[in-house]
Amino acid sequence: MSMGKREHTLIPKPRSAFILVRCSRCNAERIVYSHSTRGIRCRQCNSLLVENTGGRAVIHAVEVNRFS
Ligand SMILES: [Zn+2]
Image (spheres, rainbow, N blue to C red):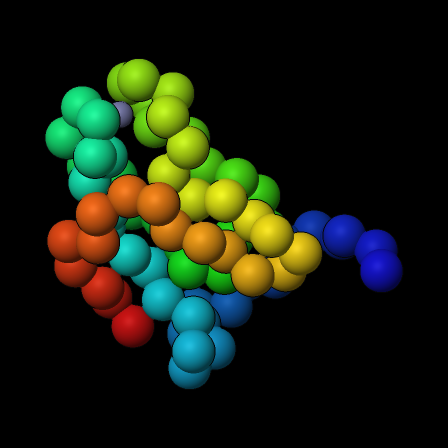
């Protein structure tokens, strides 16, 4: 599988969503993509917010809001 340029898709696939999460450690909020292929860390305390486990993103932070 090749990882090319990001597609400029305006409408995400139905099951994917952008999620506003709050870091459970420092309460910093940020928007993450539910189907992120990379782990996402908190910008403030560097704790792991989203972990990618073989194509499926696992959210460790508190889910505040979901934009689907
Ligand atoms: Zn944090």
